Length: 385
Image 1 (cartoon, helix red, strand yellow):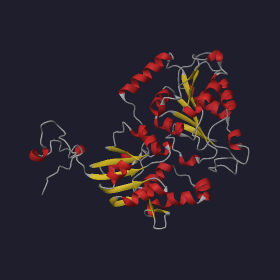
Image 2 (spheres, rainbow, N blue to C red; image 1 turned 60 degrees about the horizontal axis):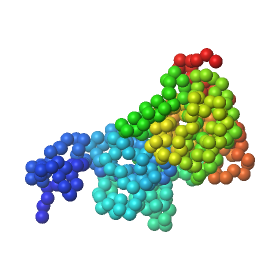
Image 3 (cartoon, rainbow, N blue to C red; image 1 turned 180 degrees about the horizontal axis):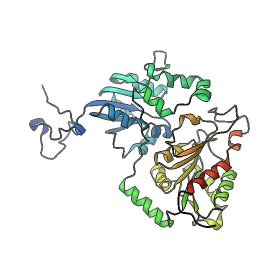
Image 4 (spheres, rainbow, N blue to C red; image 1 turned 90 degrees about the vertical axis):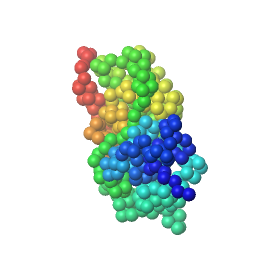
């Protein structure tokens, strides 16, 4: 039996893509470059929400290199909301039995694995593809680079001197090299839908948003995996108090479920300014709504956490501080500054617990943080004190 199946993204083999139109009999109705299946590319980026978002700049590069292509992305369920509304993705697969079963039966032209994890690499080994880039698993169960282009990224994970002291390249630049792509400093991709835009406008009305003010968002926490990526409550109270001295600055507290009590504690110290100059945004509404609250802000202050990556994707002015993680790997796209502890030999370290009394957090330059906000606020009409 011979079937003349159209190489079209809309064709499923289950039902017509348009009622009462038989494409097997009459030919494809959508024979256009943007609907052709073309080169089939699967991206595997599973772990860490910030990494998934930070890897989205490879999508424009892929489309420049392979304009007639279909791009699939495999990720964890909790990262789904980061990738929806992405115009470059044709199909999003989640890390579950059903998706893995389907993917094993598709013949890809390219599989691009960004993750150095045994389960991601094992999955790559099982997939059918003409070319595989990134990272694989060898017969001893060890992670290995797929080719020489992945070698720098591979060595970065094994060589602390290279990762912590020598490397000055951003992670996304390195990922482009790993995937044989030309790096043109494309931005992270995060798009709101129409309902979310309405939600943002309603929240602005609720807080009497005034564009003459500078709205400063404090992403106060971080994931529980690396708990030392956040300032202390006292540090937040100090810097927020200093910023509220300036009449043209308003504060928005941001965070996730794990930051609820922390934000309440910070908010309670500013009773005279509550809901006029400082706002405590909800922390239990998920990533998409959290992004809506962040979008109100002009400036976002954060440690190296998902909140920082989201602020970068939303094109905010970002004041990011670093202690245990590597500042050089983060791309701010010219919108912000990095605060790095000077002369601290143990930083960065990527340790989950600190044997040295968290010196990197104690050394956060709150003065420079305040000055950076004030300098940014000069770009807007000011109010007299």
